[in-house]
Amino acid sequence: MSYDNKYQLEVIDRETGLLKKITSDIVIFCTGYTHILPSFLNSLKEKIHFDSENNMLIDENYKLSWDGMDTCSIYIQNGARHSHGIADPNLSLLAYRSAVIANDIAGYPLYSQIDGTSLVNWGSK
Image (cartoon, rainbow, N blue to C red; front, side):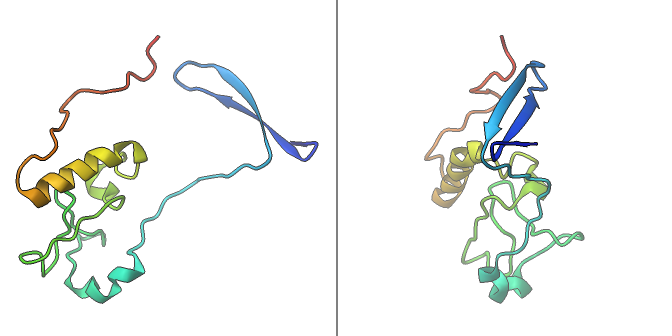
């Protein structure tokens, strides 16, 4: 609903159950996500390897599988949700993904990785 050309929103934190009221000038609904091959890769499309659902094949180090990968690597950021899970497009993991890629390019661990430890304890009191 609009009040004085503003929107009154009620949101619930599903972890804590807390209700919060927010007044906003604009509301953006993000209801879906579809990844489309970027146009700058169109000239390489015939060389890129895809799975049966037309997703690019990307390894654990975010390296794209393609016909030229023995001499030139292409790394994918924010395009591996189908293979790396729901957290792939989250900016909160950008530094981690960048470290994985840098380590792969270098061929040795430039950056140590945190395994199995969370820096944030969500929902704790």
